[in-house]
Amino acid sequence: LTQVRRKSRTRPFFTKLLCSLNQFSRARPTRTGCSRFLLAAIAMDSDCDALRLALVHHLGALHTDDYPWALGVSPLGGRGLFAVRDIRTDEVIFEDHPIVVGPRAGRDEDATCVVCHAHVSRCEVCPRGCGLPICNTNSTCASSENHVAECNLVASWKPLKPETVSNSILRALTPIRSLLLPPEALALLNMLQANHCNQSEVDINRAVAEFSNFPHNNPEILKQLYKTSAVLNTNAFETKLVSEYEDRKSLRGLYPLACMMNHQCVPNVRYCFDAKHVMRVQATKVIPRGEEIFTSYIQIFWGTYARRVHLTATKDFMCNCARCTDPTECGTYLSALCCPKESCKGRMLPVNPLHLGSAWSCDKCSTQLNNKKIARVQDVLSAQIITKLRKGDPKLVFDFLKTCINNIMPGSNQFIVELKLFIIWNVGNNEKYDYTLEDLQAKEKFCLELMELLEQMGAGECTIKALIYFELYKCRDQLAKLQPKEDEEQEVSNRILNRKLLDRSWSMLKWSVGAPPQLRQLMQRIDGIQEKELENHH
Image 1: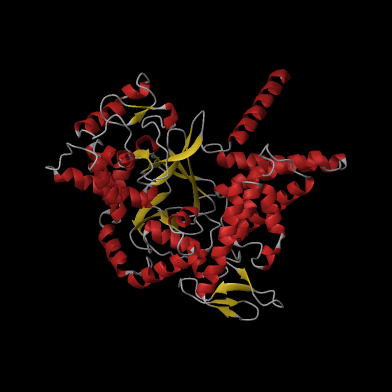
Image 2: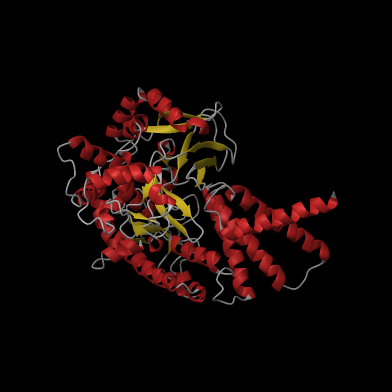
């Protein structure tokens, strides 16, 4: 939302999106019930077996004989993954590795070494003429097999300024890498869905313009670059990068099996990546046999309006899932505002959440407001909240939560949830601030409230819940040191319950390269203590 606001300061964010999305909803059909998608799905049915075989070949050693998924035609249109048997909570459904991985296409992304992805401040421009950033000319990165191959290709096209890093070429590097794929990998890439995106072609054209010897006499090369760019735009996952110096998201990878999963705003899986970019997908709840396996392309605490706008802008479809259809969003009221009538304690909700221009009505007194007024209120609130978050001071956020904001939004509103998450991630974790007993008690309360929201929407054992488990563990550990001592039996009981939070968080996050470093260090220390105790015992 912040990036959108920066790009357009002439019109309020929600008001502008309302106008543009109203035009979109009139011009394009929704994903569900669209004959174009259904006809495409029927055509794809005959290709599912060939695609499944290609996926199994791609997975190699990651594929198991008892895999619990099947590729089929989704009721949403196109292909989807389905459970061939009951899948248990936390069960690994599959692991996948990328066909191609490379720098993200975002314009705000900093350049990194194209081999190990270290930050550009520790990089130099490759001296062989490709103009790509590498750690330094004497490193193993410069002489690595993968870099030499792409360096020879890019250098043969003769960059106009090989002595400097071209952001346009860097943004197109992942599609360029597809030209070096083995035939079977490239064939699999070309079997994946590719939604047309003008910006993708613009980015490729800008990169091509940076070369003096691009092979324009071979149209298949440019065609493949367009195709790969569209496939990435439709299917790529942002993969976590962790190094000795930084914890950044700066890569995107094309995971062909994972991208078969369709979207739902309450998914039934979570996923993570290891240090070698292998993706692991696990069930967040029991998935009955025959049920479709869903991921999510959005943040789970976003309200319906924000989710549907984001999906329209980035994935080119409107979601009509059960959560989007329900004005209360499974009883969480993430989108709700307080009724403007002073004597009323009701909540304003969209009458028809699937229509972006829907009027809003109070669930108690039936007062109605048009969508433009609601959009203006949301725009003002989002501006205030963004200002508070940018300052990075939890004290300001606490003060904001204690003011009249509660007369405008209920405690479960998406904006309030964003502020509560800020408190959860920062209180007790920022050495610049001293925190009181009351601050920690508020953090504990917010952790419990957000876990209750996740339960209400049926999110299961999702990643954000694992992160909240860890923050709640730390918070209660800190509270135990500040609060008056209880009787010994109660203290032991509290420590046991708190340790269960830690163990549960670790069991969900230990495989992820993006797990909080503090959690990983704590568990390593605990494991070391336990090993020493065993040695002493023997």
